[in-house]
Length: 231
Image (cartoon, rainbow, N blue to C red):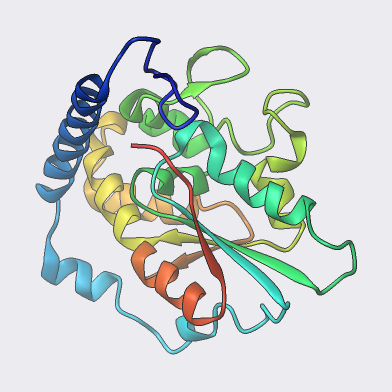
C-alpha cells in the first residue's frame, strides 16, 4: 500500500515493488559514490581536512537544554531545513532553552554555497536539484535567501536559520571532493575550484573537518539525532 514513508508506491503495489524502488535508490547512490571515490586522494584529504584545536570548540556556545542535530546528507528538496525549523518552532519560546545543529554533508554540502558558486559550477544541473520558484533546474542556491513563498515555510530558508542561531557545519571532505568533480563545469583546475568553493561558503556557516565528524561531535555535545532524509 502507499504510505507516507514511500509516497511513490501506488495502491495495489506490494513489498516486491518497494524492494525494486529501494534497489534503484541504492544503485543511484552507488553511482554517485563511485564517481566521488574517483576524486578521493586520501593523503591529500587528510592534509587539507586535518582537525585543528579550534574545530573542537565549534559547539562551545551550544548550551541549551534541548538540542537537536539534523543530519543532511542529501538536499532532499530542502526538508533538512524544514526539520530544523520545525524543531525550533515547536519549542518553548523562552530564549536559551533550545538549540539546533545542521550538518551539511555528502550531496547536501553544496547547500552551504552562495549563488555565484552554484551558477558558475552548475551545481543544480550536476546534482539534479530543482528550484521550487521556477520548477526548473536550479541556477542559484534555492535554499539561500529565496523569494517569500518559494519554500514551504519562509523561516526554513538557510539564511533565516543561521540568523536564529542554528549551528551549521559544512563537510570539508565533501567540499574538497565535489569542487574537484565540478571544476570542469567552470573550466578551472581543481585547486582553483577548491579556493572558490571555500570562499563561497555562506556567512555564518562553519567548515568542519567532515560531516561524519560533525554528526559525532553534535551527539557528544548532547544533541538528539534527526535524519535529513533523501536517497
